[in-house]
Length: 81
Image: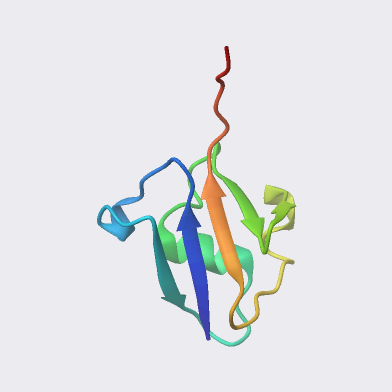
């Protein structure tokens, strides 16, 4: 199945400078599988959203993916005036 992965204000080597890409996964894949394939599962600061909803790291393995889902990845950052 294919899911869309979007990077928000970060870069990953697997993306080659792009901000989004499709990812091919097994039909029974979960969010942890996607993060592992991207090489992003070892980054303790990495945050993930699935279809606009935050998914805590301790729920990645139990969060099933479906074809057409969108995973957004980012790291917390500070800013403001």
